[in-house]
Picture 1: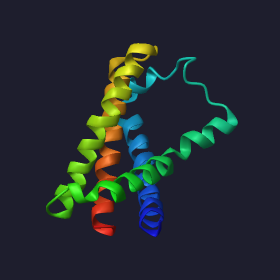
Picture 2: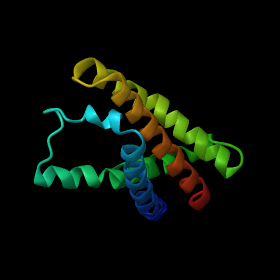
Picture 3: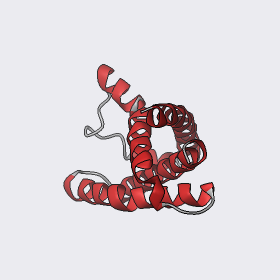
Length: 135
């Protein structure tokens, strides 16, 4: 369990910092993309904000467990293993979720593509951290 908790916590902190730094930069450099979020579908209510801001830790712990369970399948230098892990996760989990989100919700293609890129970057970064900390 220690091989899952500590790497998950470290990845959670890193993902939190990178995610919100990246969000700040994305809003600054791509403001038109974020106009789409002025939509009743995206409401911000007190307790739900905490869920949104804690997502980096939720994904980090889930990916940490996934890494610990399947790390033996990834071979090579830690960077290669981390990137491959992130790509596998993106293909297996993110693409289907983005597909169903785009087909069922009133969201734009640019939103879904940005979510896919965002999630892929998170999973690759987490994979690199796990490959280094928990080889």
